[in-house]
Image (cartoon, rainbow, N blue to C red; front, top):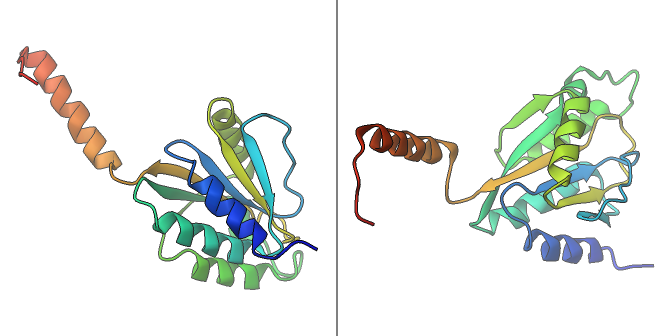
Length: 170
C-alpha cells in the first residue's frame, strides 16, 4: 500500500512546475479521467477539502502564482436530502479556502474552460474519493507578482503613449 503522503510529494513536485494559465482541479470521485498529454492526474486518499487545504498551502509558499478559485454554482443549490453530506462538505470547504474568495460558474462552463485551457496549458487533476456531486474545486493559476489592475494600468499607459506618439527610451 502506498504511503499516504506520496500524493503530497507528487503534488508538491508538479505544482512547482506550473505557472500562469495552468489549472489544478481538486476532483470528486466521478471526475472524468483524461487521456490528453498535458493533463496529469494524482490520486489522493483524502477528501476534497483536505486536498484543497494542502494545495493552497503549497501555492501560498510560492511567489510566482496565485489561484483564482472556482466552484460549481450547483454546489450551492444541492440539498443534503439528495446528497447526504453536502452541507458538511460546504462547511469544510469554507475552512479550507484560507480566506480566498471563490467564483461560481455552472459546472459545464467550468469543464469548457478547463477543456479550452488543456489545449495549450498543463492541467493537474487531484482525484479524491469524495462521492458528492458538484464538489470539485477548480484553480486557475494567475501571476503571483502581477495582478489584473497592474496589467490594466500598463495597457492603458501603452495605449496613451501610442496615441500621443510619445517615444520613450528603454
